Image (cartoon, helix red, strand yellow):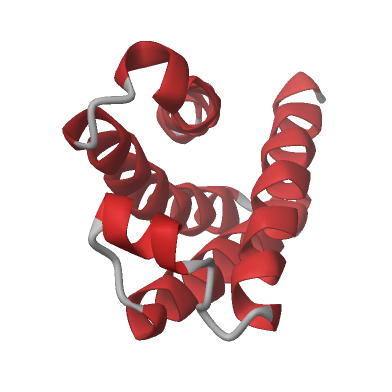
Length: 115
């Protein structure tokens, strides 16, 4: 039961950020795109991956496969976000939000293999 609540928490946070990227058509602002060296189409793809991963996490009560696929999609995007924050010189404080969600999603992923 706790795992499903964690999946819902991760899914809610990631779904909202994914929708923002999709609604803005990948345009997050010139400063954002210059700082992180991300183009608008790349940002839009990241938004779709986040939204799809969150949707799969919302369906995680149906089976472990949904959790595994959802956390895999989310981990790709959040891992890239953490890397981009660190590369931009923001340090741990700048990447804290993405890193915490990434950590929770990885714990949820590995929990599916526990018997």
